[in-house]
Amino acid sequence: MQQKLYKLLHEYYGNVNLHFEVEKVLKEARRSIDYNNPFKNLVITILSQNTSDANAARAYLSLERVIGELSPRKVFATRLEKIKRAIKVCGLYNSKARTIKNLAKYIVENYDSDLSRLIKMPAEQARSELLKIPGIGEKTADVFLGYVMGHDVAPIDTHIRRVSQRLGLVRSGAKYSEIQEALKHSFPRGKLLRGHELLIRLGRDFCKAKSPKCSECPVRSVCKFARESSIS
Image 1 (cartoon, rainbow, N blue to C red):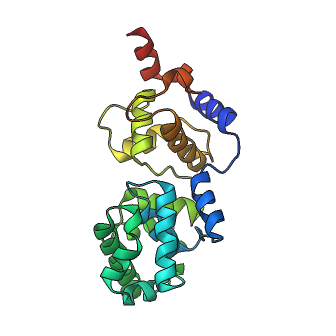
Image 2 (tube, rainbow, N blue to C red):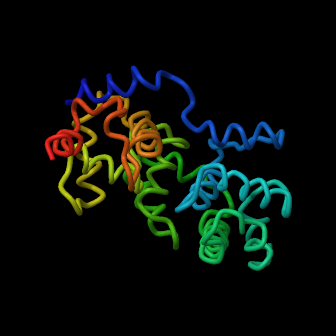
């Protein structure tokens, strides 16, 4: 399964940037997002929860238009209502605004607004520190480890959870850590982060929550759900 799953996904999607919805929004706005910036990475990941990548990007750009270049001190000094209004497009803006505000507060008070000390830590220590921040969960912490710190890790979102279960990699209701462990055995070493991107894309394009397109899916030959669906 290890080589076959990745091979099928790679053959279908190739090496293209799979976040093309974000690219389109940024191109239209003639703006960019620095995903390697530690604070900005955390903010965009929070905004992306339970919404499309495009709306997360729109919310991020809106927030920058309102308060300027994003930094922990600037966000900490901004009124909560102002943040809410700026990010409304991405949904769940009340809770996301509080999380972003609390994140900025925590970084100002515990890191003097500078996360460079955090990114020099070993992966597990950095992850543990990130999980101490109110509103930061495992997925957000792992996105940080992968895209900011360069570790080979697979953050788990709702798409990956659904796809992993349908492929037969994990049982229904598997824990976050169990899915990560299964993916370590399902992708070649050094390809976990790319595998994360490929599975998200697969979940959006084919393995949808409702009405999955099994007959068109590029990995149907190794999928338990597709096999069982064709039998029934």
